[in-house]
Amino acid sequence: MPARNVDRTKRIIMPFDTIITALKGRFADLATSEFRDNRRVVVAPAQLFDVLKSLQEEHGFDLLFEMTAADYLKYPNAVDRFGVVYGLLNTVTGERVFVKTVLNEPDLTLPSAFSLWKGADWLEREIYDMYGILFDGHPDLRRILMPEAFAGHPLRKDYPLRGRGERHNFPVITRANS
Image 1 (cartoon, rainbow, N blue to C red):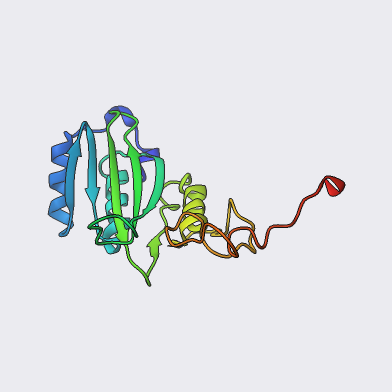
Image 2: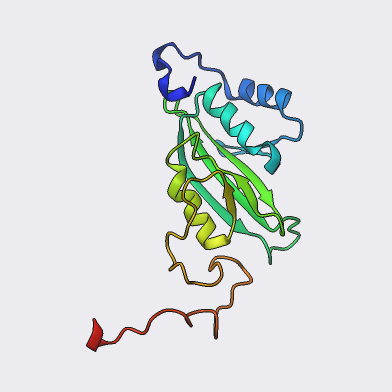
């Protein structure tokens, strides 16, 4: 049963270390870290949806409060090209956890989290629009910030900053037609 339909007053609150132990018991290649009360779980793309679902249904992380991506193309010593980060909150305990996964070209597809949290809708569309990462199972994956005819993904590190590609397909707006 999804967490949003559970009586929150009867939910058993587990310490975060217990949650991590449970996750590591179920998912093989799971890495964790903690820095200044920020807890992070790093998971392979193939296990991402199952980890997110487990955190929501079994451990009470019922709110996706943030979702973002980063392009590590020119980072020193970076091994992977893209990182996608999900910020989850347990609204009963106030605990937060960040779930991170990494992607490399040519396969830039992740499972959509829309079926778990409806709030993932626009967040996934923004990441698709700005980075070109696809979300399999998203009900309406289309551009949200840039025009549909726009070529490229502006937050990628290899996106051209000058010349053709930057503003060539935006309509010219003058005072006469505004």
